[in-house]
Image (cartoon, rainbow, N blue to C red; front, side, top):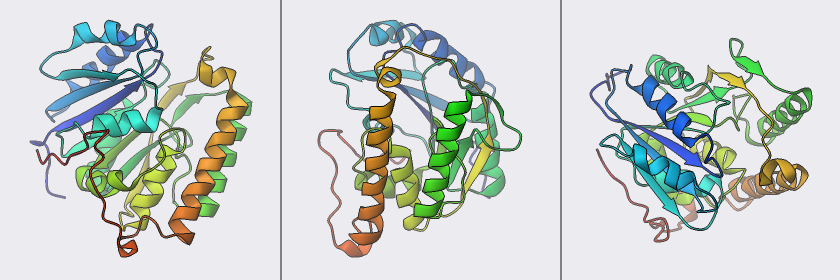
Length: 267
């Protein structure tokens, strides 16, 4: 693989109701990025002005950290697209805001990306050398959904939903403008569409995760969230294999999303 060490690495941090953890999360991510040979930028996306997350994050803005927000919560998928559309890197990663995921995993993702000359690297809870503290009922949900995804989309990964992934920029340039899901099934739509378009070099990397129970609208409405994710996943399958909506042969004219100000920035 041709070295990309002089290219920019963009890391997106989507945040929702993280006023207590956002400062620590940003600092932890930057402390890891400072140890890399890559120059970097961090883009913090506050997904809805529902608490003090933006106010807590904005003092950390610098020449390497950009903090952006919009007022209405739209979901993780929307936040990631919003941040990715504003990124400049040749390699683009994202990591969930919070303290559960160790950002040292970003180094592992980047090492796997270079080693495999990959299109996408997926952080996986179920990688053989991952260190994970996870309740049994979430293990069942995660592995059950992973099996469903393998059956539906034939992806060679065991964990599509973990909030840490890394992409070659070209992949996102081709994929992002086709996506429709804004919430929980955004990850699987992104991976399935990339695979469909021929970006099949998708590999897993280990992570360290220590799950914590957090009182939030998501944890309080778990079954509704699961239902929405299942529905969105079946919708992705329908668009992918029945409608062939995402294919170049569909003759759709893929356009920039004006609401997201989506544009291609070649760094």
